[in-house]
View 1 (cartoon, rainbow, N blue to C red):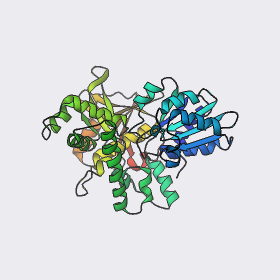
View 2 (view 1 turned 90 degrees about the vertical axis):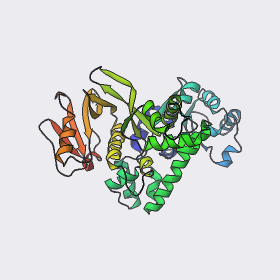
View 3 (view 1 turned 60 degrees about the vertical axis):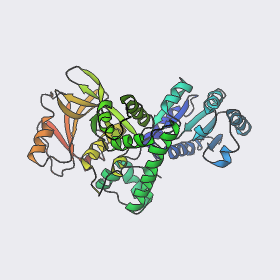
View 4 (view 1 turned 120 degrees about the vertical axis):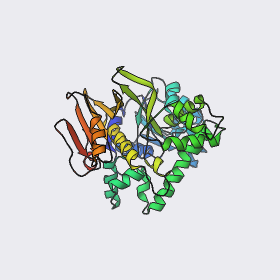
Length: 393
């Protein structure tokens, strides 16, 4: 597995802090591997390390309560600063109480947990003011290229547009095996985990909602518009139920709802959001007859890459014309439009026209899968294959 320095460098300043370090993100996005890499790095300076994986029966069958964990640490730690790594700690009863106590006694604590049980809302409630959290995502293309090289494979941009960046899929040689893995992963993290966690009784309704949302990536939606579609099959569906379900997917890091920013009101529009999937594979596995949604997946990919680069993202409403992204970072802002191609006149006019009346104080960028450079005097064209290896706009 590649060394994911992009994430580890964010955690490194807190290695010796008494704040609990919580690594979050969608299941199978690489949280546990990153924690193992942090533990390996710390082992270069200290052997006072305890690493427990609570999915391991040898651990979970012997350490079942907070008191038992505290006792185990006390009996096995050495003098001085001790580094505690607890993987999938949500399997432990009252894990929050154990962490709050252990941090008081010269222990530096790192934890991960499955997205279905250990969510940001719970961090805030149980560990308020005592933690820092770090979001881990599936591979972006730069990481895919590095890992593929390590495995002696090649992964094309087209492959990334369809099947995304869940790390483990690259270990399988055939597309059929990768699809099988992704389908099983989807059934676990999207369906089974959430139904179990939230005790969802209307299972058929929930599955219809999930399928609709994950096929609607890179589109503007509202709870009302989703409700209008879903109630065609499920009359017992309410807008409040839809809003709850959206919250479940967001809490589990499966989707992100990005607000529109309006030039007219100079503020966020609260009722409409654009949905982006944590990984485009969540769309593609729902496609029939290899009719993959490359246009919307491409925009979703650009969103994930911009977030990885550290940009804060809004969808920009330019007097009724949508600019896909207003990306801001370190006081600079960029207007970014995304299209699969602008080779045809109609597409060229539509995509470049979205920038109309935006002044030139901010850079205007269009990203497409074209090989020809369509840059103008006011708009910078970046080819997708070049964008995917950039570290900054």
